[in-house]
Length: 353
Image (cartoon, rainbow, N blue to C red; front, side, top):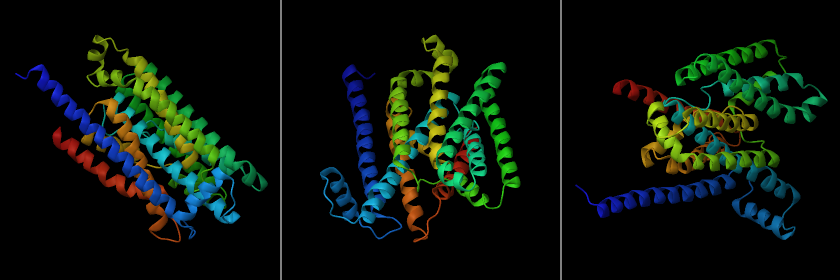
């Protein structure tokens, strides 16, 4: 048998490896961030982007107003939004897969994205003429988030009457998702043809037109949920053993499940409200995270957030260069990567059953 010193030594080696992985991911994220800042629809180079940042802090005026606007109000908020949205979706997916004990669950399993799409569609169809310019940018994310909360409440209330088991929550979420998907299709069917391009584009997902106030809201939401997740990390580790085992060890399974459920809804709702539907990040990132650092939530939480930010930011940067000067919606890139990976997970799971 191993003595205490050997066990401590092995634990330190494993911990050191995980810390090095986190450091490498931070370096990788910074590298992709710089790549994203250097690429865009205009020919504004990376040097001028940093020059614009310098002017902002020093008060100097060394760039033209158009160059300053492109750097500070278009390219930088877009890059930050892509990073934060990816981290939020990845963290949401990690938490959902944990509390439902199902590796194929994602932030969109409970119908949250379909409900948000329905809210956004209502806003887009309702705003015409001058209202489309003034109210639509505000009303669209507001209704998208509101309906994502409605979907969460519907799932939770219906599942409560069904015993609030994990299986009931998932199945109820799938049913609610189909309901809102049908309502979205109905709106598309009756909508004016002038609104259809906006409806379709929003559902493809994009961080191209993200404003600074939206970035601030997304950062604040992620920061609160990230810190709360770390606080609950040990409880989440115990919950992975199962409901009965967790309860026997003093963990209030229903309370932690409810808190986590609310966090995933808020993270997904806020992200979808500002970026549209961006699929598969919340499915792919948590799986890769577990492959490289295991199942300890103390490390899974930061690694998943970092990897999700890298994944979506890289996808958005690719979306800018694949068919340049035109751009692809980032949701197309993530789906092209995510669908094969999802099928791989399904086949792998069936093989192991």
